[in-house]
Amino acid sequence: MNELFYGDNLDILRDHIDDKCVDMIYIDPPFNSKKDYNIIYDGASAQAEVFKDTWSLSGWQMEKKMIFFDDAQRYQKIHNIISVFEKLLINTSPSLFAYLVHMSIRIVELHRVLKPTGTLFLHCDPTASHYLKIILDEVFGRNNFLNEIVWCYTSGGVSSRYFGRKHDVILFYAKSNKYKFNTQYREYSKKTKQRGLTKVKGKYFASGLREEGAVLQDWWTIQPVLSPTAKERLHYPTQKPEMLLEQIIRAGSNENDVVLDAFCGCGTTVAVAQQLKRKWIGIDITFLSIDLIRQRLLDSFYRDIQGLNEKKAKSQFDKDVKIFGIPRDIEGARQLATKTKGDRIRKEFEKWAIFSIGGVFTEKKGADQGFDGYFYLQDLNKKKNLYNIKCLIQVKSGKVGVKDIRDFSHVMDREQSPTGVFITLEPPTGPMMKEVARMKPFTTSLGKVCDRIYLVTIQDIIDGVLPQLPIQRITKRAQRVLPKVEQNNIFNP
Ligand SMILES: C[S@@+](CC[C@H](N)C(=O)[O-])C[C@H]1O[C@@H](n2cnc3c(N)ncnc32)[C@H](O)[C@@H]1O
Image 1 (cartoon, rainbow, N blue to C red):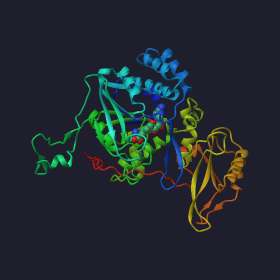
Image 2: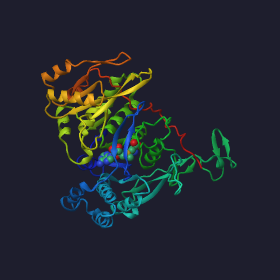
Image 3: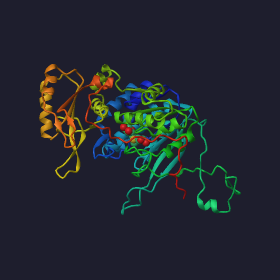
Image 4: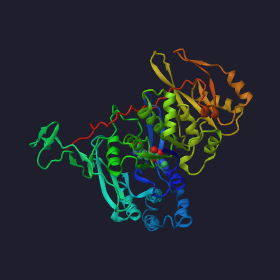
């Protein structure tokens, strides 16, 4: 069975993944790029924070205790390197140091879960690849370094102050010298083919040229998923091309092998692994990712399957894929609401509740503004043009009363939100329901009648019985996957 985990990969790896059970790992962790990535929603200018790529020393004391004292033996291999990085970077580049500690401890866990025949592909960029390579040398052993794969692309902007930065780095290591590897091929370039090749029964023959194509080297030319018209694009900010993952997964694993991605984003690895008949384990720390992956897999592999309606497709999916960490009952929701460990899972309860009803989470900087998220409602302006009205969502995980409804209504007035959604973990009181019922509904110029405030309970979300909300789900849907991945995004130099 395939497994999708919602949570911090360090906790998941330590608590749920056994030693030596994985055949191949691909990870594409955030790059210490000091950017916060936002997902752009389809058809609206709304943006929701996906994940933070900024690193601080706030967790360092806790990690130090774990690495050097509580679990000193388990993390022995990284003691020296972390001490060296500490001397070198803690004062001059504290965020880089925090990032490297974060990666080191996870690399030890990834090494532990790999089978002796297993391999790891770590995707990074040239700003951190040299540091990460030292960590990998320490944990995997210098002799087990196999390749520094350079993934070249041509899209995106360039600078006039230096050469265009147009490649990522994928560090490829084996756990031992008994590792699995399947040679990969690429099509010969047109020029090579023209050099005296003959085509017999659809196949090319010439001296020195292989029927399968040219052996793939350690530099790859695959276009990224940037074009707005790219079929596989899901508007996830760091989505990687399926072709890239296809090459990696084919090289490092065989059918029925287990592939792990511990930073799985919008699920490119797991979708390609599924297509190539591998078993897979995916982990991500944001609910949005888990939700996107679930939808991507449903759309790509379960939708429109003959004889399966949507309900049956979902139930087949639930049999094939086990999802951990997403609340399935009220107790689970309560646990998520009270989970406070670390900055990165802060507000995950609010995010989960908001995404579950199709809204957009808003990370507020500074003082609380009295709302947690929003959605867009279409209306006509004075010139009779369509425009989006931003409508607010509030999430409460504690005790609630009629005052909370009145306060939310004031915030809605301030933000000019004619309708809104109030989500509560605890059941609403009688006076709250009365207050909501006596509020005047709002009618758009298009004739859509909306309640002033919709009361939604977490129980409604869990049971999937929401009131008729004026929210349209706006994330992009994945295309149905064809039996074979199209290979038209390779360019041959
Ligand atoms: C660069 S993206 C991966 C993109 C992915 N390769 C794809 O094609 O969609 C990195 C992902 O790592 C996740 N992440 C960051 N820190 C994490 C952690 N400690 N545990 C699990 N996931 C984490 C982020 O939420 C983000 O989705």
